[in-house]
Image 1 (cartoon, rainbow over the protein chains, first blue to last red):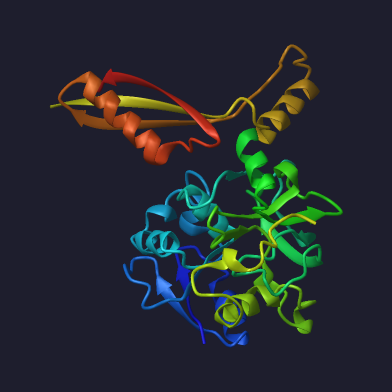
Image 2: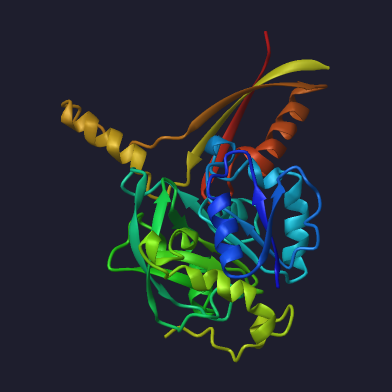
Amino acid sequence: MQRVAVIVFPGSNCDADTLAAARDAASDAYYVWHRERHLRGADAVVLPGGFSYGDYLRSGAIARFSPVMAAVAEHARSGGPVLGICNGFQILCEAGLLPGGLMRNAGQRFLSRPTWVRVEATDTPFTHRYQPGEILEVPIAHGDGRYVTDERTVAELEATGRVVWRYVRDNPNGSTHDIAGVCNAGRNVVGIMPHPERRTAPVLGGEDGARVFHSMEARHATQHAGDVRAVGDRHLRV
Amino acid sequence: MSAFRVQVRVMPRASLLDPQGQAVEHALHALGFGEVDRVRIGKHLVLEVEAPTRDEALALARAMCDRLLANPVTEDYDLAVEEAA
């Protein structure tokens, strides 16, 4: 059973759904308030969606300096799995734990609707229960979801298979290369804009997001601790 | 120590799409201001800083921009400093 810390910032609003999704996958999930300095023995950390600090200044810009973020960065540096969903992805970018940044949607509007994404990388702690190339229906709910980075970085992300999820059918927010999620070079830190915790049961409209949490829970069963790159070099794009 | 007023202008990087600027540009065209082009929207922050000298006030403000006020991936900034009245 994985110990999963769900970090709660002032303004987080997907924390309860994320905790429930992790528990449904049989993880020992618990909240960690952003002012805490310890992760209480977490195996994995999830930064949930929401509007931390009201998105003041920039989405995630103030949350990244919360006391708990030093422990999250240390966990990431030592190879521990970290997942950022939506606002969590924005915080990870602001913290420099993931490359790039998330700007206002190209169409200016807040979007709350289903999207379709293709699983591009299955050698991360959060996606190894999917098949490469699988298409998932997962909803988005964001105003600042346009992923941007410089040309050199996006080329490097593509060349090293670090685009984790990519929008298909349409690109809702104008993200470069239709990027919906990326990982760091160590592949243990993942950020995604769509909300897998909102598609974990038929009653929620589908289960396409559930395997994000099953992947996290099953990590030790399939992978050697701390070295997700050992899973057969399957990070090449299909 | 004296008080300095620092004005910080933060702009989305020129190479990136600025949908807010575009929307305002379209609205200006619709109002008949056909002369308008390349509207961009950023942020203007005004801070008061205590520092021994103007240069140190500027250095402090630059450090604040680099750490928090601007995102180096998506934004550029410039600064103006004057003695606070």
